[in-house]
Every structure is written in C-alpha cells, then in structure tokens.
Image (cartoon, rainbow, N blue to C red):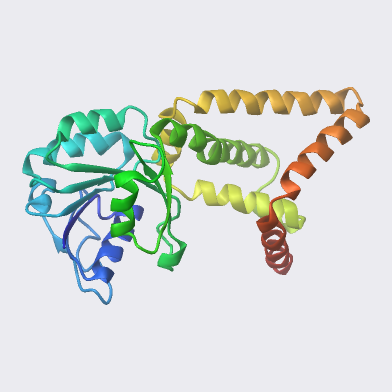
Length: 290
C-alpha cells in the first residue's frame, strides 16, 4: 500500500511514518520543516521525502494529514485535486468542530474521509496500546470504524459521533490541560521546581509531574485544544463553580458539608478498579524519586 504522511516531522506525523513503514508499506512524507524527514523509519526501511504535499500524495492509497489542527483544512485544499479516486484521507485533529463538514464538502464522494483521534502519544512503543477514537456517521461501528480497524488492526477502536467526541474531549483534554497550566502557574509564584520537589509528597510530586508533562507538549496544540472546542468554555465554567463551592465550605468552616462532598466523590471514583493498581505503582515510583 502507498501511504503519504503530511506533517511528517511532527510528533504524531513521525509516529505514523514509523507505523506504516513497519507494516511494510511504501511511505512518502512532506513537511514545511524539511529537517528530520529523511531516514525516518526502522526495520521497514526509509520514507521518501517529497518537496510538496501535492507531490507526496500522488497515486497514494492513504493520505494522513498530521499537521496542526488549524492547518488541516488548508493542507487538504492543497492536495484534494491530486488525490486519486478511492483514496482514504485520514485526519487526526484533537477537536473536530466544523472541520469535518468542510472536509467532506471539499473532497466529495470520490475520496473517503476517515476522521480519527489517536488517544496516545507519539512515543507509544507497543502497537497493542493504540486506542483510537473514530468519528462515525451512524450509530455503532459503521464503515468508518471498519476502515480504521483495517489500517490499525491491533488498535482499540472507539466509535463516536462528532459532537460526542468534542463534548468528551472538553473534559478529557481541555480540562486536563487547563487545570495543569493553572497549577504550574500557581506553583511558580511561590516555589521553583527544585524547591517544590525537595519537600514534595507522593501526591504533590505526581501532580507537578503531570503539569510538567502537559507543558512539555506543543503550546499551539494545547491552546487549540481549548480554543477550538465549543464545549471547553462550559466545562471550564463548571470547574470554576466547583472551586468556588469547595473554597466557600472551607471559608465558612463547613466541615460536614466538605466531608459529605469528599465522601460522595470518593465513592464515585472508588469503582475505578484500574486506579488502585496505577496509584500504587505511581506512589512507588514517586517515593524512589522523592
């Protein structure tokens, strides 16, 4: 199979280059950042670097658009006229918004649009850990999920509607990024990372590490995750109300109210069987560092 990866030098772009090469596919790559494209690959060989996106997609069966979210539509316009009939155009935006409708209108019926969201980072080492949200036009798995499973047979495929995806990601991504940026900014007003870690507890060490992991990502992506998702504002306002609610209990010395709220949340998350094992593992690692 012939595959083109556009935005090949980025994190997810380079992941998909490696992935398709290791499958044994013929891979072409292009990126506005020319450096880092040549010699990409491992046992599957090397990708062919092309001068332009249009050159890369010529005669390809699959085209992966792995550029920043706000450039997805622009790049799709660049290549739409060069895609052969039956090509699968894969877009991987973290927020779908109105982009999908614009893409569908752009490519028409001669090209298949596969909208996915890789729910893992580019450093993923085992393909068995691939978890992918797939936007489906119908309830259930549908043809989009089947197409995704064909390309990524070892992945866990999660079918979702466009609205369901963005609403869910407003909590899973937008809220996580927002809270950790705020946390890191607050800590920085009082302590340096070195001062913090010198006296940190396992819980605080985990929290700062999570904030640092968010800050290690691309700022443009983090901003887009917040700004491009129409549901993010609603979730952020809910977080503000929750903070005010808890702070009011503490200010007014409402121990009973705080205890009831804490207990309710504890019971809610106690059903998460995965958490106990993960927490023990993280505590063990944090204690070794601290």
